[in-house]
Image (cartoon, rainbow, N blue to C red; front, side, top):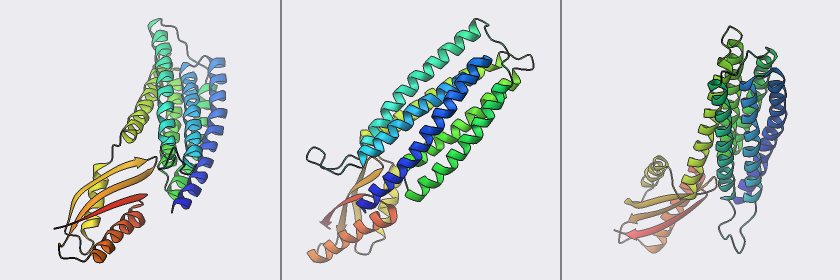
Length: 289
């Protein structure tokens, strides 16, 4: 099971690399065209993609480090490296989002804006189509290898596609005596960058502080209670090693049950959670009742 996870992580690196290449090309294109046409919204969208480069590189580094096997200093492996990388990326994204907001709000306050050339709108739409296909690739890859990181990257790809569509709409709208619509769209992009950075930070910090989804714990508990011989689940806790779930559970069995039978039940609990619910590691403690 562990070797399969390492192989899946390596496959997931392809998705991160494709995202990096796409963001590099599209970011450069948007910043060039945005600067040439004077479109603040397209420049903000280009900066948004620039932060996505950093985030994708962080995910790639995290995936590579997390593939390292356990060693003397990391007896539980390096799985959390990906989560740490995501947190670093989120802080950088939030800082860039604040910079985009500052420049866009200053432009609105100074009434320093004009209607950009329509080529900037066509650029935004072209980039949206490219990002949509990147999203489809990463979504399918994430589902195939069951990687939360790759699926999260796919969602980010899709949101970037919609941002580019919104940027194009703002630019087109600015052609109809609504020149203020372009910098206002830049404000919206800046807010989206900040929100994305905050969401990534919140999820990463939740995992690093051993937070766990209570709904999943309830699903695990119900599955355990269906196993013959388990009287009750006295306690169940979960934590994350990167994308891997680790569960500690205390179950009760009949007090007159033989030790061998109780051991067999604990193995059934482990198999149930690992095979059907994809839990990476399960620690089962059996108590008589």
